[in-house]
Length: 415
Image 1: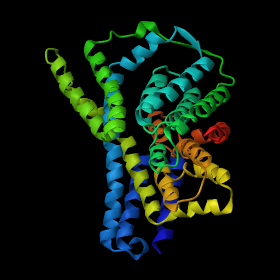
Image 2: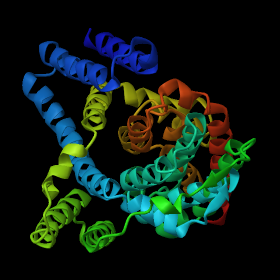
Image 3: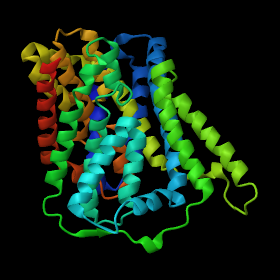
Image 4: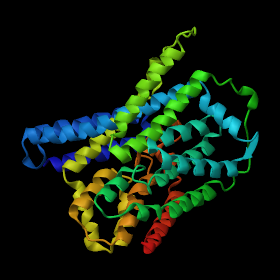
């Protein structure tokens, strides 16, 4: 009885996200409403007739995942909010880039930079910084959408070949389905797919982008110190996670606390009206609430058993085709529980197919703006990037994803 109700509510919630531009109701409000409503109904009519205690355990598990992501986002966004408000990122970009660059060349630079940065940091941080760069350039809204689309795809592609870059990659690695040398085979096809997308999106873009050097502010020592702490935190997150299994959230919160303490000391002798901790207030809480709502909805879908239905695809078609479709499905269903469901089903596949599956679930979420953390952040940050405007890029994205998946599958032959 409860499953049709949950599915209906989830469908309505995602429909309201799609038509946000028409109804003018913020997506954070609708997803939070339907996400919490689904779980209230689950307590009144428990999943599969289970006891309220079991439902409470299921909710607690989902809340833990949400809180972990929420706090991580809060820490990363506070760093970026501070550096943005000081013009630090804009200053660095304008100092590094030439006085003028073509829009087409800039597309390739942005795509390659987002890909590289997501390879050495997490997707959330890579997205925030990449978006901060392009939003500092005052681009035409339609062109800004293209750059943001490329960033979402490039960020998801960059982390897929490293166990520290994507959660699903780590899950598949820990299940002994692929090895680290196997995963490194994904670097070339992933990067090639990003460059193909950059080529398609840059068609017809010929105007020059001028960097106004006169607008540059002086970079303060305090800002440089905070930036060093930020990037040191990213590096420490990777190292401590791999060597000692320290949760990334813990390392990032430590880095945030260090930022507060160091900045407090450095600013003590300055006449400043704003305390360093006040930059938390500059975070877009719409983004965080949107995350909460979406993850509550996905959690409800997971608990009613919808995800396990997708594993039946492997009974209907060969793994190489099923994996491709699973990647596309990960754009509507969170790729972590989807991967968990497939691993739990213990489907027999070769290492080549597992490698292709790793690419599919890591990059497939790029097909829809709500299909990945990078996409959700981009939609919240870029005003003109909506579900429908991103959907208009779906043809380009599908071609790039298909090329990347095909390359990943054939790269698996070298295992």
